[in-house]
Image (tube, rainbow, N blue to C red; front, top):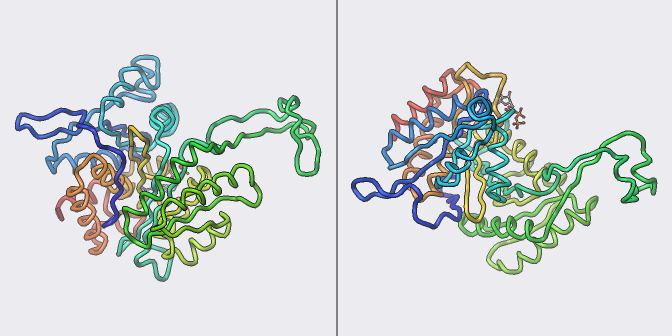
Amino acid sequence: MGAAPERGPFDGPSRGGVDVTGRSVRRVAVIEGDDSAPEAVRPVVELIDGLSLGIDWVYPLVGDAAIEASGSALPPASREMIDAADTTLFGSSSGSSSEALIYLRWGKETYANERPCRFLEGARSVLADPHRIDFVIVRENLEDLYVGVEGDLDTLGPLAAKDRSGRPLAASGPGRFAIKTTTVAGSERVIRHAFELARRRQRTGRVTCTAKTNMLPATDGLFTDIARTIAGQYPDIEFETLIIDDFACRMVRDPKRFDVVVMPNLYGDILSDGAAGLVGGLGLAPSGCYGDTYAYFEPAHGTAPDIAGTNTINPTATLLSACMMLRHIGIPDAADALTKAVERIYAEGRHLTPDQGGSATATAFCKAVAGRM
Ligand code: ATP
């Protein structure tokens, strides 16, 4: 964030056409999400819409409302709307609207999840010295334990799989398994994305690859070996590998040494929430999911169901995700201006939401940001 560009592979003509003045119109599909998520997405869209950037917002029907209207959580018309848009801004889902998320990730092959961790002066960090923390976790987004293949252990009999003691897994009694996959192509593309990001960020110029290579040499070992090979093609970027538990400790003790950190899916999901905790919490953690032909943007947090209906969700994560989106669709100046306005609001400290020690609503926060533009 800030000076760090989060550009993706958007390079074609806008799918939104042009307006009457000949200006290119970007079409953004908005999926507001569930529980508290709409309370963050709505004021953020209103704020950006107020900047008159020539964005055409479209709203695919998903989840329960779509089931009621058409019997499907993601009907073909909604899928087509997502496809026809330049990008999607996604709140956060629970329940039936998760089908839209599955389509945005696996359907659109958005394999690289960038989760920036940057301290905003004035945010409520637990660290004594959080100033200038600025790194990005690049999480592989489609493979690993998230391929979603789980089952009963007794179905593994034909595989004759054994545990480390040599006992057949299927004979361990009732229980379950989950499959973790690491492919060469899936690892290469996300690792390359991390190196390209390190080049664009122009900071330390360092990529850290982290996984549990000592316990999982076949899968995590492959991921790290591929990173080592790709590192050879980026002599301008420093490269290191760390075991994931060591990384977790270093991330807390010395977060400023990191620039871009690439890791398999599950570790990235967990550690990016940990990283958010360093700089003020989930309310400040944006994310962008990039593929070769599509990207979508969503806050790193979930739907915050415990505060739904109170208008107290911190919309910063959604707003900074929208800034990543604006850069991706070729409107970087607005993204920079919005980011600067958010920084001013945090520095002033008068319009912050309850998670940051303030009493502002999500709506009031966004209005205050609009006032600093
Ligand atoms: P998921 O499983 O989808 O990641 P979760 O159930 O683990 O979601 P979150 O929805 O991310 O968790 O919420 C975890 C806690 O953080 C909750 O107490 C929630 O209210 C709080 N929280 C999350 N996002 C925000 C936010 N933007 N503003 C304020 N509090 C938030």
